[in-house]
Amino acid sequence: MLRAVALRVTRPRVAVLSAVHGHPHADTDSIIGAVRTDLPEVSHQAVYDSLRVLTAAGLVRRIQPAGSVARYESRVGDRHHHIVCRSCGLIADVDHAAGDLACLTASGDSDFVIDEAEVIYWGSCAQCCTARTV
Ligand SMILES: [Zn+2]
Ligand SMILES: [Zn+2]
Image (cartoon, rainbow, N blue to C red; front, side, top):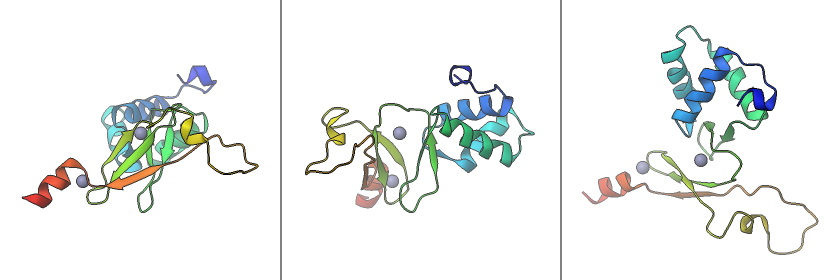
């Protein structure tokens, strides 16, 4: 994947990419933890740099719901949305309700060409709903 976007293949980049694949929507600290199981000597800075490079290259998508730290995921390209639990912060993917392009059609006239719609739904995850009713 790194070679496909003309990035130099380094051990931190490979380890970060596989950590993001294995832990969708993980924050930087969790990614550092996961990378260190493979590569114990990796520095925080190397992980930050790798995340920045991978995000810029489009291999990793960065999301940041309000009030949350940045999260990273490897499911790129389909512009899916996210749902966030207000209680525990769990993040899940939400597919487009009405097709990939429907969200990119804003109603009303504007002179903008829209290429991304970032929608975040807020609510309670199943576990938090259960905890509340017990
Ligand atoms: Zn929850
Ligand atoms: Zn996602």
